[in-house]
Structure formats: structure tokens, C-alpha cells
Image (cartoon, rainbow, N blue to C red; front, side):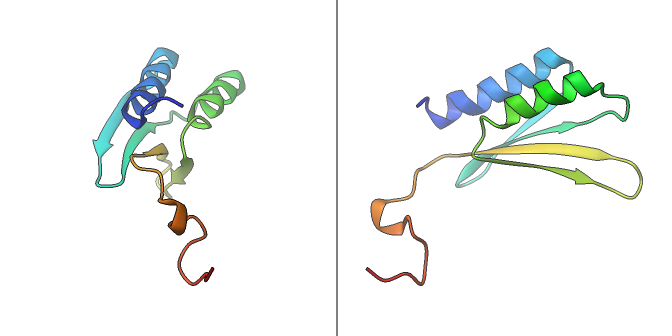
Length: 92
């Protein structure tokens, strides 16, 4: 599995190659990649974009009432420790 920085850069590079302008932001626990999605994006391009963001740990689409659409992807910087995998509230 590639380092988180490499994964985030690869996602951004592939989205740029598709013709979308990317924004990368570093956060404490993850790196986020965002793109504004034009209204006229062809279905084939959507499929390619979804293949790219599926490489991330999580992704989503934010659509506003004004017609703007922002696609985001997040790549975690650190994997959770073994004891934290099941989350809070779970006892061993």
C-alpha cells in the first residue's frame, strides 16, 4: 500500500489529467482533495472520476442549491492502532 502522501498526490494527478482543477489540503489526520464538478460532465468522465476517488479512504459529493458541486476525497495519514479498530464503546 502506498504512503498516504503518494496516494493523495496520485488521486489529484489523475483528476487533473481528466481536466478537473484540484485543491489539496493537509489536515491533522488526513489529506483532502477537492474538485469543482461542472454541470456538463459526460457520463463516461463521471465513471472515470469515480474510479479515481474510490482509491481514497472516503469520498463524497457536496451539491448546493445554487448548482455548485464539489467532489471530495480524503486519504488518512495514519492507520488506527490495533486496539482502536473497533472504535469507542467496544470492550475486549
